[in-house]
Every structure is written in structure tokens, then in C-alpha cells.
Length: 260
Ligand SMILES: C[S@@+](CC[C@H](N)C(=O)[O-])C[C@H]1O[C@@H](n2cnc3c(N)ncnc32)[C@H](O)[C@@H]1O
Image 1 (cartoon, helix red, strand yellow):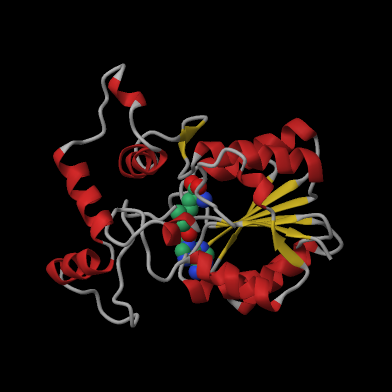
Image 2 (cartoon, protein in one colour; image 1 turned 60 degrees about the vertical axis):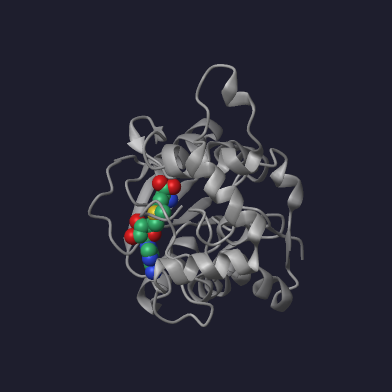
């Protein structure tokens, strides 16, 4: 999930950021109901009393999780992880079922998610994690299954190093790097080669395209657009919606299975 706590809202043309007032007016016109829901959230924050906290829908719960939980509370063995924890449970399903030789995680930040993946591989007794990030300066874990490749995920040099490490091995790719449509699409095209038949390429944070701009989770040009374009051009992959069995996920339509 993105780093600042909110995704930056770009103008529909993709240009400079618009003033807040203009964005608010635009969102009222586009979706009045969403605008009033947002005002209701400000006036009546998530009820945290024992009984009251059960009276919120999934949408409110997600916004609360994103605003107050994911950047403040979620850790794996003490290391910050920017995860919807229900997705992490689905990741262990996939690791257990597909037994990848390599998990290539694009975007590692503090490394809580990377360490989690290494521990899952410890449990199945097989595999390595390649952590790819443009900046590993805040990365914390040290674990024998983790190898780091520092660089832009789309750079020729980064990809070349991973090709050497991944030769002849079946990979699970998890994308949590640069979430812009163009970047995710470029990574999908470049890293799908590491996924064998039956394996997965997980694109994270497609949820940001499902929520509306301005509610703290919304992003006009995010990873879901890249997924849609990629699925149109590469028939080897399909979105495995069965992996969304918790309903709550940061990755709707982001569990891409190689079926051909
Ligand atoms: C949301 S954080 C990753 C969080 C981590 N996966 C977790 O769940 O705790 C996104 C990371 O992507 C990295 N990143 C951004 N653009 C990138 C790029 N072009 N290539 C590689 N990494 C990139 C950032 O440096 C940042 O550490």
C-alpha cells in the first residue's frame, strides 16, 4: 500500500494536482452520494465502542483500516508491513499450494512483508525471496532466504540480475512498488516471464481504483487499470477471483493466475 497514508489525486488528464476545493466540487458533481458519505465520516467517525464498532459496513471498515491501521499497527515479527492482513493469509494459501522456488517481491520498504514471505517459505521448507526495491535504506530484516536487488524494478540492469537468479525456477511475483498504471503495466510485462503455469502474479492495491478519489483510498490512475490492459494483451493470465474469498482485500482482481 502507498506510503503517505493517502494516494495523491491527479487531475483526470494526469496533470498537476488540483486544489482541494476544485476536487471536492468535482466529486460532488460526479458522485453526490459518495460526497455525503464522506461528510458523514467526518461528522461521525468510526465508532470504537464495544457494541458500536460492529455497526459499520465494509466500505467504512476499509477506509478506517487504511487511515488508522495499516500505517500504524501492522507488523510482522516487529517489522512494519503495509498489508491488508487478510491478503497475507491468502498469500500463504498460494505459497502452500504452488510451492514457488522464488518469491519476487517488488517493493519492500521496511521489510515486514518480505520477512513474512521468508517465514512462510521456512514453513514449507523451500524457496527464496528476492526483494526488489529502488531504495533499501530502511529495510530491516536479515534472513537467509532473503536476497535483495536494489534498483528501479523496470530498469534493464535490475531485470537482468533477476533473470540470472531466476533461471529455470518457478516464481511467485508480488507487486507493491510504484503503483502508477504505466509502471505496473511495465512490471507486469517484464516480470510475468518468471511465473510458470499454475503460478501467480499478485498486483497489490488495485483497491485504490475501486474506491473514490478523495476518500483516502482512491486513485484515478492506479494498478487496476494496468491489470485490465495486461489481461487484454496477455491471454496466459486470468484474474482468479476465488482468491478474494474474504471479500475484503487490497487486491481486487489482482490475483492473476497463469492458466496457459
Ligand atoms: C508500499 S511500499 C512496500 C511495502 C511492503 N511491500 C510492505 O507490504 O510492507 C512501496 C515500496 O516500493 C518502492 N518503489 C517505488 N517505486 C519503485 C520502483 N520503480 N522500483 C522498485 N521499487 C520501487 C518504494 O521504495 C517503497 O519501498
